[in-house]
Amino acid sequence: MPLAPDHPNTRSVLDAILAAGPVMYVLLALSVFSVMLVVVYLMTIRRGAVVSSGFMATADALLRKRDHLGLLAVSNRHGEAIARVVQKVLDFTTKNPTADFQQVRDLAETEGTRVAANLNNRVTYLADIGMIAPLIGLLGTAVGIVRSFSALGADLGTARYALLSKGVSEALINTCGGLAIGIPAMIFYAFFRGRVQRLISDLESAVTHILALLSVHHGERRERAPVLLENEF
Image (cartoon, rainbow, N blue to C red; front, top):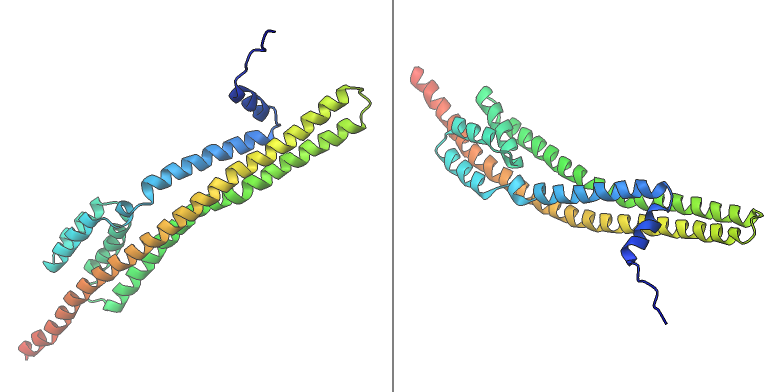
């Protein structure tokens, strides 16, 4: 007895997905976008992009030598988050040498908070996809069920059952598609959220270290100022 030719399951599944209605195209676009976000976050949300040991070593050495202009030039060449914070602080201190140190501290905290908020806001896109994808899948499910009931009410003979089966299949595929995109998106969101919190903690420690070195220099300048005034009289 001749056996029926085998057809690859991948092709039949792909055909079913493509035949599941226009909502599946939206879900496919969301899946591509979520994969792109994960790849980008893996490359950008990492310690080397926020606080690098090389920059911190250079900053420590230059601050101990009181070379603020040299550190400002180094900060302008680096793209790390800590480099942007240091660049803002040094740009302010060089333009306002008589500024109170509390103003310098407030500026550093404001810039650090802005960087932290930017990191947190970036990963929320994955959470948005994780919530939106199942809802879009539910929309496709509702459309498939409507088509199934329309087929039940139509006087098409045996073709009615084929249309009913097609509507149910479309509904189930859209449900699975929405969940298949939403669940991994939420998993990666939780992963990157944890990584962001660790990086923000590292950034806070680095900013605190920079401010400690700057406060020492700022205190020495304030101590020397009365001596200079006494020598004038």
